[in-house]
Every structure is written in C-alpha cells, then in structure tokens.
Length: 91
Image 1 (spheres, rainbow, N blue to C red):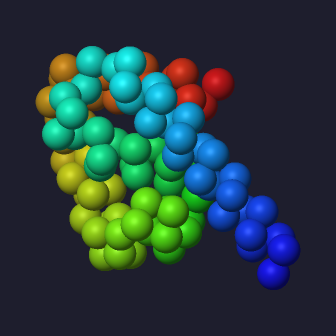
Image 2: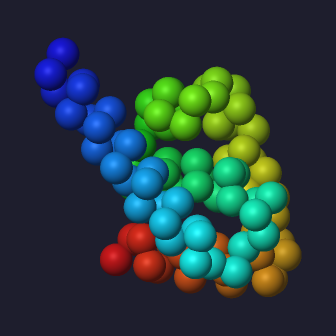
C-alpha cells in the first residue's frame, strides 16, 4: 500500500515536470494535454491506468490521447517539437 502511494506520488511529480517543460515548448496549447500524457506514459514509464488517475481522466481517454499523438507524428513540425521534449525529459 505504501509502495503504491510512493509510485503515485512519483507519477504526479513527473507530470509536474512535464508540464513545466511543455510551458516552454513551441507546441500549441491545444496539444499539450495529449502530449503530457504521452510523455508520462512513454518516457516516464507510467502505466496507462496510473496516468489516468494522476491526470484525472479515464483509461479510455489516455488510450485515445496516446493514439492522437502517434497519429500527429506524421506532421513534421509536431514531430520535431515532440522529439525535442522527448530528448529533454528522457535524458
């Protein structure tokens, strides 16, 4: 039980860091919600159910937003901006 609480707290802290990075990024404000969840799951390794919990949404919404970001990677400008965030957060 205590371990789960620690993992949830760590996911919340990671989300705050991601949001800080997004605030300084060139991504449009409308894209930030999907990207923050995408980075939380892909870069930070947070499970989709836990991401849903810390982000205050459903697991289905997390899945939908992950697919939306993957679909947008065909847009070169979006992909470059996302790649910069991935490098900054993943290092």
